[in-house]
Image (cartoon, rainbow, N blue to C red; front, top):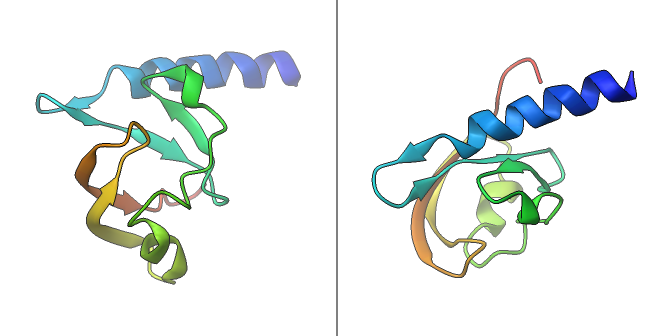
Length: 88
């Protein structure tokens, strides 16, 4: 169980890390509690993004899709989208 899950998370981390949007766009994979599950920089894994400036409304809504401006985990002003992954 645990080894198989770890291998799957390693693969997921590689997939997310290889996905860039344009020159500066990045992909975050976040769980229901707002914790980073996978990101291009694994040092941020487990960080809670719910309290990043501008992201409060994204987690307060009952709709699975949100877009707007917020401050990234690196402190940059960004425009982003959060969307639920069906079946997860």
